[in-house]
Image (cartoon, rainbow, N blue to C red; front, side, top):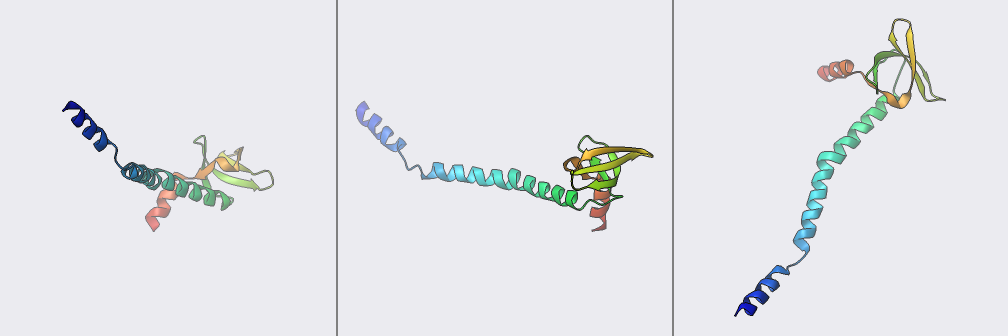
Length: 110
């Protein structure tokens, strides 16, 4: 009698792997929608801003320094940023991000 119950329980445990595969795919899709895709969109916006830099643009460096673009050297991929009157630093173009205040003003204008 116990053997019949054990065999029935064992047979019931061996189901189709389809629900498990479906669950794994669903988890990946949710992760992609909520984590990977927004990060890719944000990176695209940052790259577009970096490629459209102009002299006089307000920026924030990767280190959190606010300033204004004074000169862009595309051959060396460097940007000169004025952080105070007469104080100019040179940073890599990839570490320059949009100024938070100017971004907020642009969004309010929309």
